[in-house]
Amino acid sequence: MAHQRKPFGTKSKHSLSELCFDKEAEITPRVKDRYQRIVARVKCAGVDANAEQVSRGMAWVYRRYAMDHDLYVLEHGAKVGKRGLWADSSPTPPWQWRKNSNARQI
Image (cartoon, rainbow, N blue to C red; front, side, top):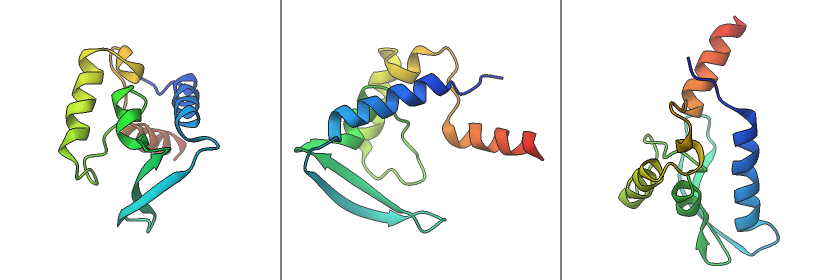
């Protein structure tokens, strides 16, 4: 079973910080998830942070809430280019990793 590498989470966080830290952000709410959290598109200094993170291989497209087909295209490009998390031979989606981690704690 593949495991989620904590260092990759740090890389993803740094990538997002590079895109957004200390920059003007535009947040466009889309829906609420099952925990009533707002799912939104975020632009930082005019750059679509959601799309850029997916393109860099720093984020997964969460199919349940993704409404933008372009995100799937960007994710495919990251997979083919083995960028970010896709450099791993068998990356584990965070929702699956959390599910497996919770099962081990019971």
